[in-house]
Image 1 (cartoon, one colour):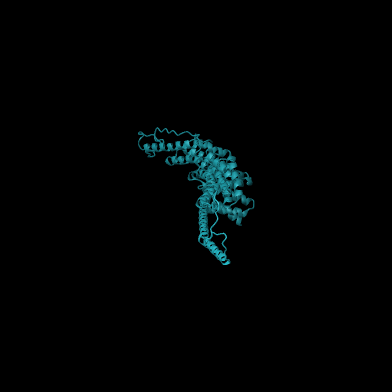
Image 2: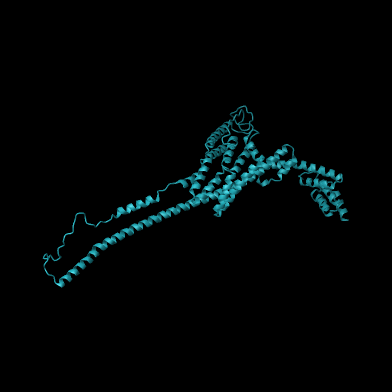
Length: 489
């Protein structure tokens, strides 16, 4: 089954375009179904426009866009068989088998024998191993979801790899693998998987979101650090207190203006000079050096505070971004779990509807026993309204036929004295009793006679009482009362 195998639909409608009834005026309302032919043709044409858009998108592997266009086409004209078949192929192309089977089953109910959907369904009816493989793949996918909710990523990856091995185009499973590797910060593996998903469906929104997450670009950390250092250097240029080249220190004059090197100083004058120099040094430190150091410390403290605030803001932004990503991934997990559960349920429903279809085929070939045997597997609660009608029709037609068949066989064996085979066939006849049965009372009566002959008197009593209670108008009631009286004596 390949995408694009269906051609654009061509509708030739010599009469009513909906029911085919012949009308004298092809532009008037149909006398049979009341359809406005002009409006209906316009709707069909618009549906075909969207079908062609879906077909072009499918040929370009833009599966998500194709599905959207085909859904619109079917919303306008649900009987657009080509659009419905192609929609099934698109679902099949991304591993969503349950939805593909749904579309093909609906399509096969709308058209005749030349519908390709019947061939698609036949693949799964004949090759049951093909459907088993998809069921096994979906089971592994559901187990992976359960492991992910338990934060057991290793077991989840094992199950997801198995699901993709069984269903190589299972885009949902590939996306979920990508999500696990993103969560584990393994972007190399995640990148390979997301590219694989986009080769299958070039417009898959989940894969595109993960692709943006994996391959987004950031400024290198080293460059940002260099830029910060340069900014700080510009704000506080280094001070160079060394003397300029070519300059020399000149002899200092005495503070007191004494130039005579031969002048003699008293000890008190020397001590006073020492005190004055010490005071000048402390004054210079207090009024010049200390304020400069204090200013430098304040500048460094301001810069450090600015850096701390910037780092805190960057950290808060990173935490918020990570929280948003985690919330988005958790939402994706929940959506995937819901989709997987819906797909599993739909596959089960389609299996039951497939059995009904097989049973209906047996009925058409008048293989009544085989039809009823197949229906034993069917849960009526899982059937669509259309399939339930077919299910009921099969039972209403086949059950009376098989009841009469088993009764005739049981009565023959009873008359021949073969009570073992008589009981076997009569019990089967009782299992096929339907409303309005003409042989049900006889079946119970003969079963009572067999039980009585084999000494099972309590069982015989139950059969006779069933005739009296459930078939009060039967001509077997008197005979049943006589047998009950005989047993009681």
